[in-house]
Length: 252
Image (cartoon, rainbow, N blue to C red; front, side, top):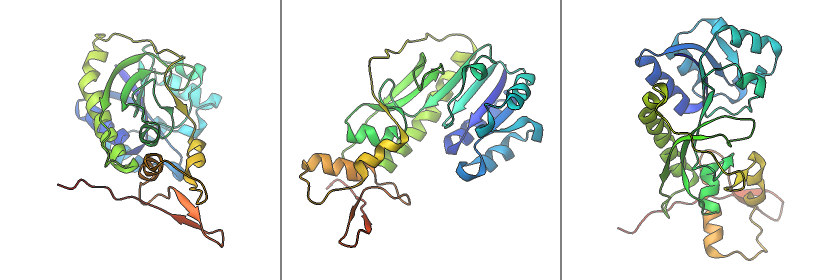
């Protein structure tokens, strides 16, 4: 099976290493451009592909990129924490489809920041391996696992749980997928939730003159605690942002 990888972040690097160590046939790699890539250099070093086998994810819509990737004759494409939306002409290049690893318990929290919204909205958290179709995280499910959200979890700690669960879910189901021993589960397009990347802007500013339920405010603050990234804030009398983080722990 010839594999094209679309990867970013630590999970993408770890799964790339796992596939490489198994002797899988990885014929190409697509990474984010320099301004928003993570663990790309580690992934490139691990896979040891030629320069003409490595592509810029921001240019996948170009006819030149489509032509070069088609020439790789990959059977399947694996998308792992890859941020770019794939067009149908790209998806159609692979006889076994495009498989995505998404850090949410689909159909809940399609889109961005699932670790945040599982805390803020109280929706199930988890990870899902699924086919990519023309929608955003709407394709048939291959496998998934729900992850518990503790009252002490922050956006960061839940994200780390989801990272670990992503790798485990992929490793546990890859052979089943290769052998055709999977059952596709159709998602209901009327179910679940969806969030854009900009949706966090609607919760980040804490209005000092507004009344909040204590639970709701705590959930916002802990969901947006992910140092060194800025999260929730309020503004002082000079209109400067004052950022907040929560440190939560059990009394045991």
